[in-house]
Image (cartoon, rainbow, N blue to C red):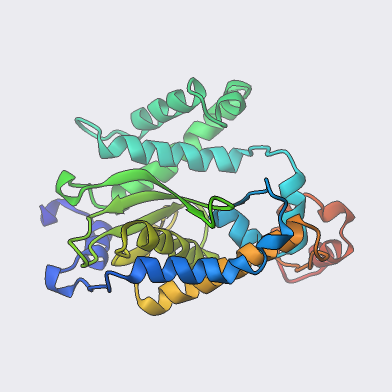
Length: 310
């Protein structure tokens, strides 16, 4: 089998592979400890919420509130509008999902066409976007998606059913009697825990370049997994489709503690901002280019007009 794989595929296998005796064991009380600490860290801000107010938390909102709070507030009020890069990424993810259970030869163009059809004629946020594109725009969408999916096929090892691959794995957790709802969706999970022994690998596929926040995204997913099952994953990894590179991180108690503290702090900030307890703090940086209020933000405008940041 190894002689049929490309060097890039073999390298990924080396990074995510392990022997069973290398898998860490975790305390069976860990899930209760993490949940209780998280709820204790958030409970102090709960009185600010109205009786029927619920805070929804996902990786995107968490990144926003830990970056520029003004952008977070603006996006909370803005109607979601899909963009071509977003849809390209979604098509690639759907193609990867289909390929896991594909019978026969994996032909990138054919699988991407099926992925587009599923999204165009299904019940998805992408449906209206794809249906209203011109033929030229659809061709551009297809071309970009095929290129990235082909890169995945050439650089990521074929998935064996014995690895228990699961795509689009969703987790929803409720804290404090449903006042806080945590949501996560992992692109690909491999393996499974054995009792208190970690064995699962969580992988996120990225169509852009590396950002440090990607580590925080994965730790957030790892924390949700630990609270849900009681056993953290043994590894977290981002796979960058354009580069064909895997960036892994072994899961440790320190990483889980860091994720728990970051999540609790983020939820407190969300409550403050959604209840208008204080003004949002502005932080400039590359995300200013996509901020919905950049045209009226003097700080963001100055950043975008400066040299050396592009």
